[in-house]
Each structure stands twice: as structure tokens, then as C-alpha cells.
Image 1 (cartoon, one colour):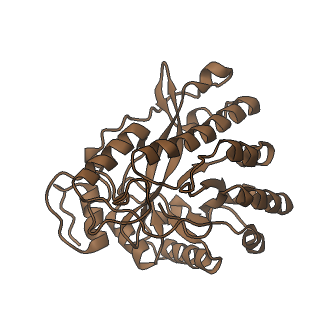
Image 2 (tube, helix red, strand yellow; image 1 turned 180 degrees about the horizontal axis):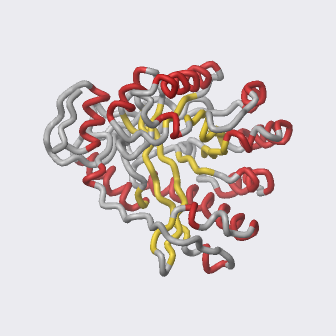
Length: 331
């Protein structure tokens, strides 16, 4: 496939997925909700899945390490959302909530700038605020007509110590449409304490919380332990996704991860998709879902809703029609 540099990365991604030539209009993010407000369904046809050039997101600063302590810092927290794309149905399948800190001096910061310096109590407060915000944001998406299954990354040490099931049970949306929450945990840390992990996984599932094993391939998991966890997603480490189209070893690892997820009755997610070749390769490998700068960048909630509504008004939006469940994640 010849890449036309005058077209956006998202338009190229759509071409790669559909094999069809698309119009030359400026692309705008995603493929999203159902024709009926707040319902889960699909709209005939498919629009552009993402559009980096059309999304005016704020840059994330490369700032010195920032220390977090005290309640004032909790007010700096905001969540940005990165769409998760169904690579088979070629539409929106949900979104991942990514924590950002809007520092008064350094601007918007990623977790790398503050997590390592935060004390455990401050990090726990920040984590709980992020969970509550994610639950509240689901209602905001629903009010706008979008039923999205949201995911959020959780530090393993906090997952073991915090009352997450109780927190979600008491604050989750009181709607029969709420598809539950996905918590993403790093592979090596979560499976290290197998007994504790199994107990927590069972309690989470009982409260509408599914587990996604993040950064798979970077650690050294026991497959027997992973099977007992009944995880919903297996997220392939970005280091293996990058250049998987050209690197036979990476391609084999991605294929193994996809096959493993399917054998466990789960879905495979590829993060960090940055070019068309890798996107096409992952589709051939039958990877279920994808995220990455090629498809759509992380963006503030308001921007995400605005772009979804814009595409819906143009009649080019689509959402996965698969009902959300513990083993099949969709929006």
C-alpha cells in the first residue's frame, strides 16, 4: 500500500482496515455510538476511525519530577480518554481513561512525572479520585448518547490495598446500561501473588469490574495463574506491537498473545499502533482491538464527546454491536 503523505494518519488507517478509498475531507475522530441515544448498536456504514490532524489536543509536558502531597494536588487531576477501536468491525469499542495532572507551572503532565515521587497515601487518594471520575464520566458520555465501556490503569499495590470493589459498588452508575469497568494491571506484578490475585479477581468480577492484563510479554507470567484469573483482556506490550509487520519475532509474539487470549476466552488488545503496516499485520493476526496514535490520540473528555457528536451528525459514526460482557468487550 502506498502511503500518501498529504492524507491524515487516520484516513490511511481507515483505508487499511476497509481496503476502500475514502473521501478527501479532513478526518475527525472515531467511529462511535448507536442510532438510538444511550443504546448499544450500530449505524450502517463506517466513517473515519480517527484523525490526529483534526484533534487539537494539548501537548503533554516533559517536565521535571513533580511531588504530589496534600488535597490541593488532587484538584489537578483530570482524565484524558484514548479510543479503543474494534479492528474487526472497524468501529469504536470503548475508551481508556488516562490520568493527567494539570500542574500550575508545568502544564499537563503524564504519570511518569509524578507517580514515582508520590507517597503511598497521596497516590491512593489520587487513584480513588480517578476511579470516581471515570464512573462519573461514563454518565456524561451516556447523557451525550454514547454507551462506552471504560478502562483505567490501576497500580497493583493500590489494587491490593484499596477498597476498589466497595468504591465501585457504591458509586457506579445506577443504570441497567452500565457495562461495567475494566481495570488494567501490569502482568508481572499482578500474577506474582497468585492466591491474592485470584481472590481480588473474584471480588472485582462480582462488582462489575473486569481485569485486563496490561503490557503482556514484558513480564514472566505463569500461564496457569493467568488462566485462574479469568481476565477479560490481554494487552500486548507496545514494544512488540511496534514494527510487528517487519519483524518476524515480534509478529510471532503478537500472534502467540492473540492465540493465548482467545484460548482463555478473552480478547486481545494491541496498544501503541503508530503506522499502517503494523495495523494491517495485527488485523491479519486477528487481534480484536487496537489503540495508538494512528487511530486516535488521548484527549480531554469534552473534546472526545465533541468529536463523537460531530461525526454522528455527519452520519459516519459506528459502534461495536457486540454486547459488553466479561469476555467480550465492546461499547
